[in-house]
Length: 264
Image 1 (cartoon, helix red, strand yellow):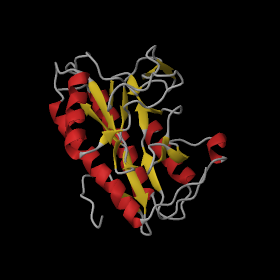
Image 2: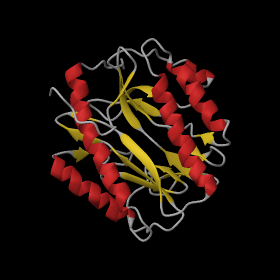
Image 3: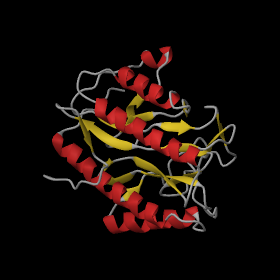
Image 4: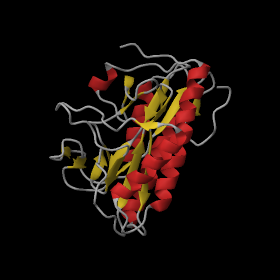
């Protein structure tokens, strides 16, 4: 499918969704503490989405099995869980890391954003894991500008991660976003010959979900029996940070940084 170029109005509609997602993630993160369940964190998001007149696009997201869509408004992934962790009775404990991932939609537009936060005091290695993953995202955003090939950015994300002793997950990548949570193009955080065949040049009006997923051990992954949760095969810890951005004439406009929309 062709990459959809957004108008300024459409970008501001997406920023409205990003504003909602940013503030919900911050409210969830503030509630993170030893003893809270991931279901309780999802309930915070459910209430805030209702207040904002938004929906969480993860809810009922289809799978290959009929009538078995994703069961919650957010994805909450703990420790070795990389993405698509299902909120439930699991209680967080001191030393855990937890990824909070939400894709709010309002009036036919959406945004996608995620953060990984510590539960109490975490190990120095996991502090570094979170820091490097966030720095990899920040690096990518700083390099976005019209005319640049995504492969140039992906290589630098990969180098940032691997030079610090971590690994980039390869089975899951970023993506276009806008009227749907998943649009073209695929936005990888690494580069291979296969990825080069689907390389693309950045243009103003592109809207992308950029989301490094980084693991502290081997990069191999597994899917749990719930058919959703993706974990590291060696059960090493993972981190995941994500922003929805628009490519502008001058560079990168982050739509999920908490700034309110204008001109809608």
